[in-house]
Image 1: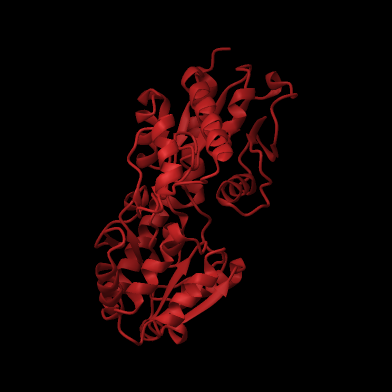
Image 2: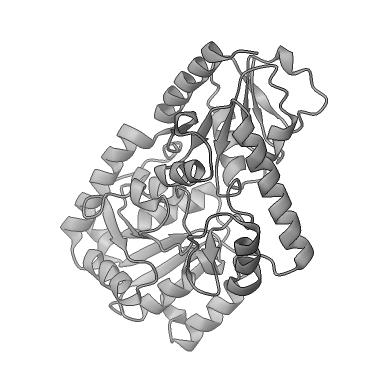
Length: 365
């Protein structure tokens, strides 16, 4: 039996939890419908394969059965897990090093400034990375961006496989963008309301868009109060609707009533599932050209890529789609076709099963 291994509850709703839950619900042949949260005391020889989703669990893998590791974020090669220098407003390009990472935490705001947290972050990441270098385990990266970061950290290229994410198609009926919906002039942001997700950038860009354009924000987070104050200060309160956390049904309705989805992340998203969800609803995406996002957006075909934190160019992209119904509709249709070809959960599972089979065949205890 093949088991998924994650230290977090798959019902928690985070990125890893959502992904693991989707794999469990896919009911792959020979794969358990439950996850293992600890490898310390279990008899690992009984497993046909272990699919590990939390790198911290690597230290307890005893190489008694085949295993693979999927990397969902930057935690294996970045102590703060963000690769983003918040106080400088740019992506971190430093190689992982105790002095450089300490400077990043203390001066550049990439993580906690508490000395004990900085030390603990470094210990955790460096311990797991060193273990990964020594273990004969295949590593799955969810984008070529993450793959290159892993290789740059010392993992042999032949051990690292890019397997892009897949999402379930919508349960409710979707349709290409209609002219009536386009005329409503609504754009949509989906995600946590925290600084590195780019909400401030989006609000500042909204000022420079046509006054008929309305922004729907689906999500919550500790940054929401300050963003609400910013919107009010800039006279945008009547052009923004804060929906908070949304159920699947509510979110599907928001996707269907918008003309485009805006994904303005400032940090280097490893992949970005919001883009794929937008495609599944026939909607184009306007997104920042950072991290793994450009691998999931064909600029000018399924959406528009915008330079990081460029207010005017983000506003221009929004105005372009809001003023051109035919272009907006075509981009959404092309995104949906690409989604069906490359990004459904079924396609992802088919590719994952091949990795499972190869890993099992090549395993040598």
